[in-house]
Length: 176
Image 1: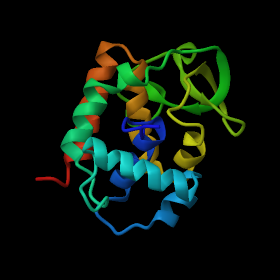
Image 2 (image 1 turned 30 degrees about the horizontal axis):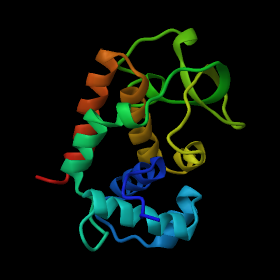
Image 3 (image 1 turned 135 degrees about the vertical axis):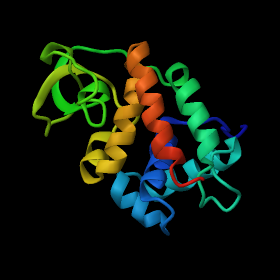
């Protein structure tokens, strides 16, 4: 059987966590505890990310330019999101920071990740990976990055454009 060399949704979540951590040192066990993934899932994901060019050969540095290009131009085709039924959950996309203050929407136009701890009702958006709401609750920087991705995955053209600019600011801010 041939090895899988593509990218999986949890790989994107891991890469965004590494971006949120900045240039600090991290260990596999830090990712395991903060993302709720197994050691094996983390290891396989990092190998896939290196193979597709999102991590350097040492699997420690995110290739932010390549990742940004994929997130802005390819993510919505590879991992599309469509609004689902109304559910209680955690705000995402244009309903969460940093877009909530910039894009005016009504309460009936809220997007949420369905979760038991959610306090907001809105149309459900399936998160990139099942543990996303729990990981986002622990890390506000990761939460913002994931919400921006959902604006690209499920938003209208204006929301996508604003989210792409915000994502670029966050991904490329330390690479000058």
